[in-house]
Amino acid sequence: MERKLISSGSTFEEEIGYSRAVVQGSWVFVSGTTGYDYSVMTISEDIKEQADQCFKNIQEALAKAESSLKDVVRVRYILKDAAEFREVWPITKKYLGEIRPAATMISAGMADEKMKIEIEVTALKQ
Image 1 (tube, rainbow, N blue to C red):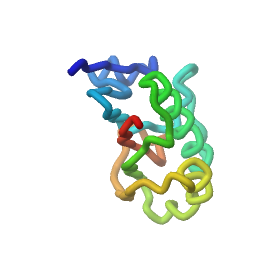
Image 2: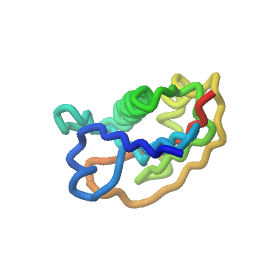
Image 3: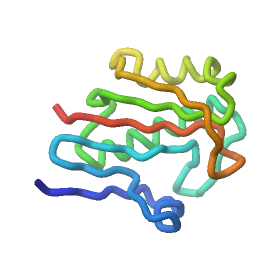
């Protein structure tokens, strides 16, 4: 079974040593993805805008894996402040409302103070 590594071009991938996504057979594992616009390495201060950018970054990684959000079976939300989770519900519903994957929300510290949310998904290509 062939393994394919996918990069977003983020400097974090090179510096830390990981892939944005790994494709193994029909499975696609997308790493925790932040609200950075990786093309210019900028990030909004607004958590809703960060969440929206997270999903755009995830969509791009899934497309490179010949997959899409419709294939997502698992999502993990990691937030610096759990109290802010409700603010991003309209964004999560916008992208996953019809798909309704299994989900978990965790509150944890972030690698960069600017980051407020990180989203990780697992997809099974159909």
